Image (cartoon, rainbow, N blue to C red; front, side, top):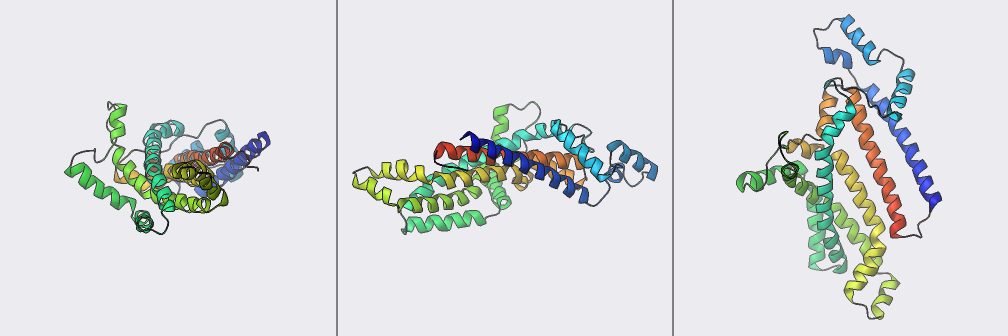
Amino acid sequence: MTSYVLQRFAGMLVVMFLVLTTVFIVVRLAPGDPAALMLGPEATPQDVADLRARLGLDRSIPVQYAQFLVDVVRGDLGQSIFFNQPVGSLLLQRAEPTIFLSLFSILIAVSIALPIGIASAYTRGTLFDQGTISTAMLAASVPSFWLGLIFQQQLGTRLGWFPVSGYGGPDTSFIERMRYLILPSIVLGIVNSALIIRFTRASMLDILSDDFIRTARSKGMSEWQVVIKHGLKNALIPIVTVIGLTFALLISGAVVTERVFNLPGIGSLVVGAVLRRDYPTIQGALIVVAGLYVLINFLIDMLYLVIDPRVKY
């Protein structure tokens, strides 16, 4: 087990090194001079050259790359060109809505998907099963921005149950800020539940047709024990995998929903940074999001050991 954990941890470090290299190359290949964009069209060539020197952009690419790696290892993600403050602080300020939005969304998605997926597999071929498959395909096809607008109009504006957009002011309490996340969380939860339903159904179908399930029934166990204790327990690995990957994608991919609900999250920050050619902010955000993605995958691998100790690397 220790060997497995160490190998997975070493693999995580290799992936992070490749991610850092890719982020550096992609950002440097982006068109436009950040110094010229920051100073505006009235800046003189000397002003642009001075700013490039101050930002370190006049150095050779290998030197910039080496300095970039050293800074990341030290935890220094640079200084935002547009906001003129450390990127790390900027990301921390924007992390709360994104993390809680992703967390609430995955909880809603799992609450919807697990019971429906299990029931669909158990009633295979029935009208309920066919309806579940069709509904899951429909939910996966609906654009999140369209569903968000419908919810804003019906549940926010018409019924007044939830705030329509924003994230409150500086004096807003934590509980009140969480209220702003209810509608976008429901939207993302519904959209992302479709994939988990399909994986849960497929995984349960494989397990429920195995011999040990028939053996459990022949011993006189109740259907609840057969399906949940024996069936779900053995079907969990692919289900946990898709839940973990969906959570990771929510953290990095909730940009559209954040824009629709005007949430000041990491996604909105990245979009603004790309439009302004704010290289340090783009780099910092991509590194943090990629790091979370890799970390979640590592935790999923560790969870395999808890679910099934027979798992080997």
